[in-house]
Length: 94
Image 1 (tube, rainbow, N blue to C red):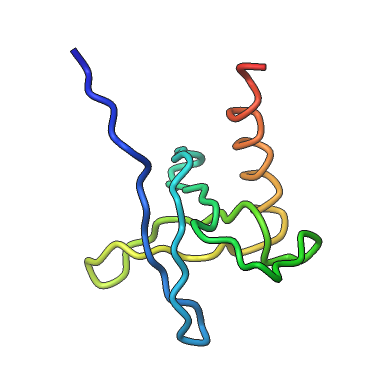
Image 2 (cartoon, rainbow, N blue to C red):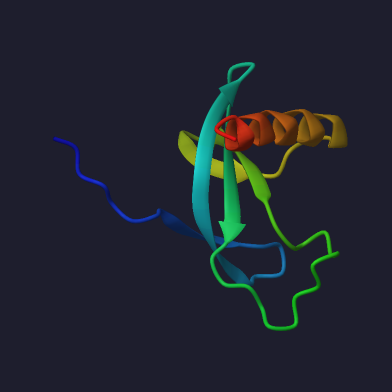
């Protein structure tokens, strides 16, 4: 028997020192790298849906000094490739 639990949330701090709560949607391994897809847990009332800061957030897991950290992706090409992989996963049930 399996038990279902609620969504996973993490809090990350951006480069300006602001804490952002994110809800984990899915994790995938690609080319030996772990990628995680998140949505902001709290949408600001004045959020602009056309802004780059709105919607899906993709981060990758890196090891630095023996510690696991989340990092932005290195290039637009990497982001596009991983975004497309997540979209395939999210929409394969439809």
